[in-house]
Length: 279
Ligand code: PAF
Image 1: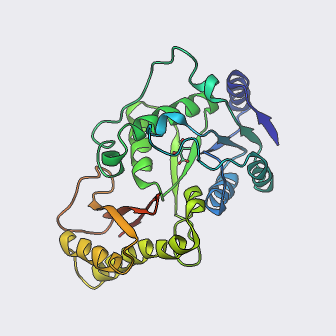
Image 2: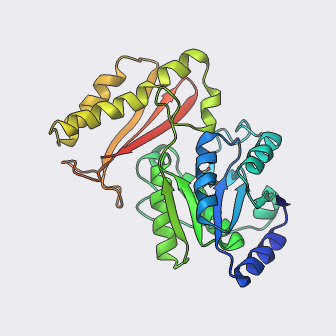
Image 3: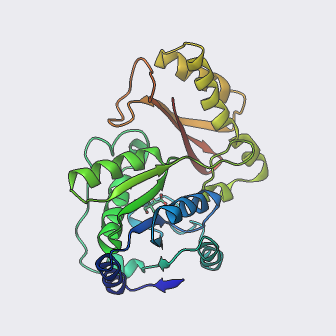
């Protein structure tokens, strides 16, 4: 596995691979890799001739009071995991190379960035869109892979790649879960054992909404009540939002149908977790 830190080197290498006709697959990450990332890497591996994984904890997507400093970092573990996943190139740029002094350019995907997680995390998706565009420009992949767990992020990235004619296929792969249903996330490490146990209620509440939907309940209000009713059993879980939305516009629907997305965010202790399902 080749490890590249330098942006120009990565770019030139990617251009050379393209020139050789290699299909480049790309998995951008913030490190602290877990089974969810591994699953993305495995599927990206199958779909590409050259697999690039990036690790970059992006300061631009953290608010001033958020966990940029504490965000888990495990370069040794991550390198081991990327080797296991048969990654060809690991790209690890530095923050000062990505955002050098005088840096001024940011991407705003309007309308999609201010709803749901965007309400409590202003600027978050501007940071995500900006870094993803920069990484796509550097790595020049044919396909880029993202997890469905960050559903709003995937919608924003899809919209951006289309709006800006980036010519990259955005592949969204199913959320990988722990045995009790909790969606895998690098932030799960923050949970103490009791909060970790309570956190399983998030997915259970989504499953309850799905089961009501399957029984014929399509009213978004009722489905939201099903979620709130389930979450009541874990008072330590503070719901931030439960959104029942159109899968592309992220607009709230009154009646859920096939393809409607139910997304939730909640605070458990000091940890903020998100999850979603597609009906
Ligand atoms: O999903 C993530 O880990 C990040 O938001 C991403 C896409 C790597 C951008 O920093």
